[in-house]
Length: 168
Image (cartoon, rainbow, N blue to C red; front, side, top):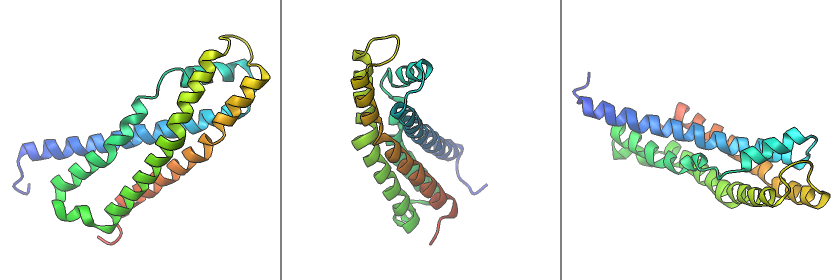
């Protein structure tokens, strides 16, 4: 033991747990939005439409855990290594990855989810969508797929930076 108190370990462990959990949940939900968006571009069955209605039927509030990632990560770094760690190149690069992913989420994915939710809410609740609605759905889903894929890549990059800590 390094002379740190139990409260330090509780605070550090809590911050790290929130950081990891919010990253897994936030980025996981972005990935799922991309997956469902991919399915929404080419509806082949009533089951796929039902799945889309279920996924996009309510706001994706849990995905907003993305906002906690830098706060909890910064707190964990500060608690474990002090302020001097926050200006290391790998920390800044990981933060840039988070900013880019957040731009994709707030600019493409989350607005797309809201528009899809509205479109599906206005469509008849059972059976197939009419051709016009299906085309509008595909158009809304199309940009979500590459945006979610970019978020997945950014997540892996940030994870690699945090594990490898280049330059530290």
